[in-house]
Image 1 (tube, rainbow, N blue to C red):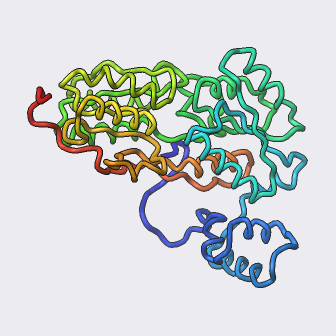
Image 2 (cartoon, rainbow, N blue to C red):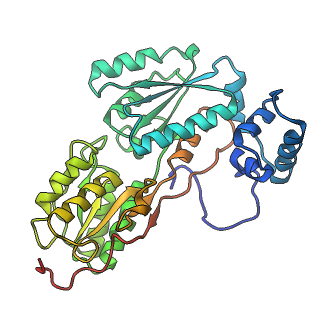
Image 3 (tube, helix red, strand yellow):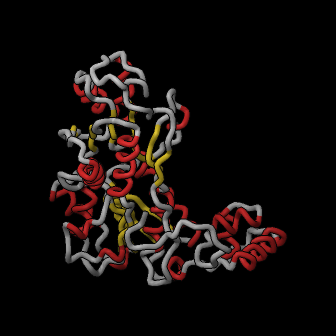
Length: 354
């Protein structure tokens, strides 16, 4: 869920403001790239395809983003993305969404990788993108390096950010109108409530690295436990996002026979926990329930299939691009959704069953 947006979740008649370039492509039976070429007057489009696209635009009432068109036809036809990672699922999908929106607007995308969160590395990266004449900047502020880069950007640089959470809690003077984020607190709360509803006495949490010591997923997990009057175990904090780190931590955690449910910071960590359960001779979900975050493409094909929170990172990237302009409110991002699969089940009746 986007905090500075709206989503009533109900079905409704087609809304012109909500129609996207992909909707037009689907209705016309062409790719969204073809739709982009039609919108931007590109000559390499067949007359038949052009007619189909224009007809779909008329039916859906699609209006190209004023913000995107301003970027495409202004002096800055380039967007640079500042990010510390290009391979992790959430980062890569968000980058894909930015690239998709930029391509549709005829804007080029460059990527500058943040080497670390050290002040000198942040200063070097920010200095390299701080000339307003060089184009706009989008920061992936999912980690400490990204959050520090966002805070260091000069005010005269056209910028936006896809953030880990509402960073304004920690930077009250910052302009959060140019940020987009998911409601990780509510998502983690719902996931924890799901496990408690299955009869688990409590839920343990393996946390991903955060821009601060306490991430929003941890906040939501703790909120759900406290609301239910359940014990709040110590958080297992990892220094990286890896399966290996989660596997090592879970091997120790699962020595405790009272641990029956684990909320993992992302799906990679959930895979590490599931492997550790196998190594400890535990069955999922009979002995241990596991929940992840992200819904990576392989989550549904694991054995057992992974219960996880689904995020639309590509839509987050598209929204971050739209926020660069001064046009109407951009397309909203679907709220995170808990996808219940086979890795969660009722709590074992005997808490000392192992």
